[in-house]
Image 1: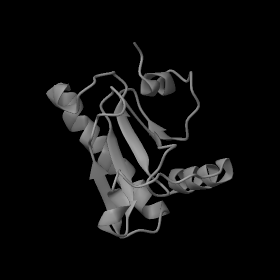
Image 2: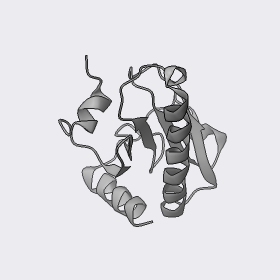
Image 3: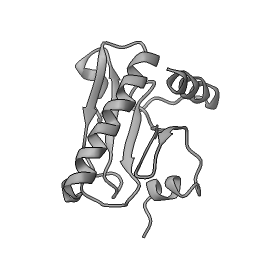
Length: 129
């Protein structure tokens, strides 16, 4: 069964896409911990990140690094935090979270509730970074 991320890849569900190529896609998390919280995923649906083949795994991290530079340039923060949890969606993914403190990457915290206009503004800032 297709994950929600596969539906985003297939454009069945809208998303604030930051960048994509033939193998990967990065988009804003709609349940963010911080403004600019971005998800980076392989287009091939694999549940567990450590089940990815070596090339896909390595290239996913390279793509994530490229995206983190854009997010860091667009969102005021001390650095970009990285998390791989993989329990909520059965599709390997990397969280890129703008950080000013360690609490900013605490996944047990309530998520931000942003308006569509805020998502659009953040999206535009990152794309233009």
